[in-house]
Length: 249
Image (cartoon, rainbow, N blue to C red; front, top):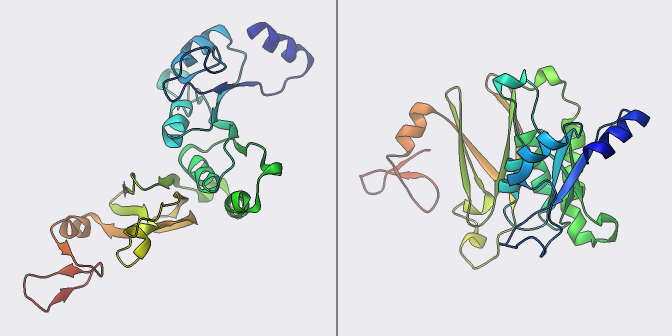
């Protein structure tokens, strides 16, 4: 691969990458196209083919956040601030959830790209989510780099429903939309779609939320500590010890 990369560089200096079929579901080499830049082999690839700019995962199975995190490798002090591996997803399953996964990848890891496979052959039901996500990303791209103070990615499903972010004393409790106590789909046996978003800080107390299927609650650290000592009723408001009295959130 290094020889191929050097040959390509001699013709045109363009970014080079290699994508990998994941060894998920406990599959062994031979059960999938092995020998690619798998997550546990990244160091070998970086040593043997340093002319390749980044290594990219094909994500088709469950565990999207886990696989994305293993390929989004930040810089170390000894790297001089250079990111060791920028996340680029050249292939992923085109489904109802891929739009929110894209929002997560760009928000959490500043992904270089996100490409649902065979999107031109998918049904409208499968592409509606990613079409809306790309429209949001197009709008967010109008933000100047200087306007982005920080960003996070949110991605929830039926098992993983919450993430708490403490940003300089502003505590953001981010949850799947179906966790709202008045939504009947939370408990009626409905299979939850994934919910995801980009949460972008644009000022000291200003945030931009772009995504679908999430709800975010903002509190100070003190308010969050007080909330954890309260019991919430079915309507989402805190119950006091005196019957008939409700304490606002």
